[in-house]
Length: 185
Length: 279
Image (tube, rainbow over all chains, first blue to last red; front, side):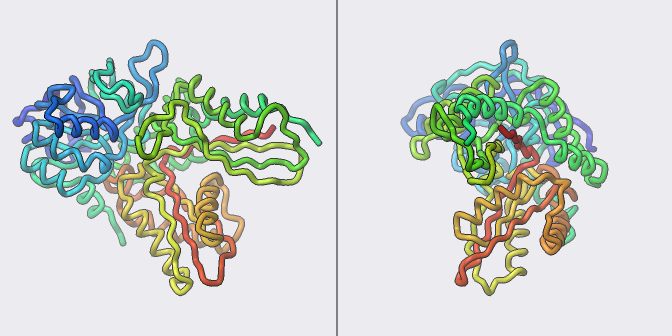
């Protein structure tokens, strides 16, 4: 197991440069949630010349649609959803200052290229570990698109949220590297 | 003729929805633990540990192991000597889904395909009914998440593709799915029937526990061969690299048309949630 690196949001370029594909990280600070429908709305808003529902500079978007919170809990189960569905929208947000995305699964070349060009990181979290991951989410509040229910944009406060660097700013891809290392056919 | 009131079905379904989403089946947990012991990739091992810890938390706290609590899929074996009173079978099941997903704090994931507007109560559920002998109803509920379902395919192969073509298609499907469907996966395969039948039997194959062998020795051999090949792909837990790409491969075969060779591959994530009850 590589060393675990603790990082804080918002992410700065200094931190982003340090992170390498394969690094395990624990994220602390604010992240914003958004998945399919929220991304479409954000891009539609930009196309109409409107603002995004939050200041995206240095931020991390977590691709998640949590289950409802039980009474007394900030959030329900909250593991990552598959990221490729946000590939059509991600480069635009990265260009605007988004510094990190947390999800699972391969990204399109356009996203990887945008990460290299504009210095952003794609983190992977463990899919299907929603009950475990929820423990690192201390607070959650809906800040936009409430009508989307689980797909609404939430501002979440996390402490030691576990993730791994998949795509770094140097063009490395853990999904490619990992398979190369272990494939036998 | 035995009478069963629809309310009894609704209550049973409501209970199944919660339990299926909170409690990982024992056979799946056992295979996950074995995979953890045997996985050679440190990152793969770490992911398996997270999955095992997660599934224990979900069971202990009675919370969903995955936030994607799925579309609610039902396989119903309806005894032909049963008379359901009070409402239609499908309505009784959907009412149970409404209640179970609300009471269990489960995510509602059904939406309009075009507007993407959430229906709000996770209905309609997907219901497959088979009429069988007897005076009982067996309900099996599977919570099927979107990530692994999206990596599933139906392929109308050519008869000349043969068994080798089938094997290649299945292995390629898992390879191309990569990290997307939350590996380690269970691969459900339906061969034969018609276009839609192949998909149905592929899904049905996923209900067989991992510790139960295929009753057909030839298919058992095929399943083991496919599993060994898939676990050489190197994808590993969550696609980070490793030997545990699949926990099992299940195959159901039925006769097909002389012109056709339907093949369905239904990928199931490691969060293989299903539960059954007989009324």
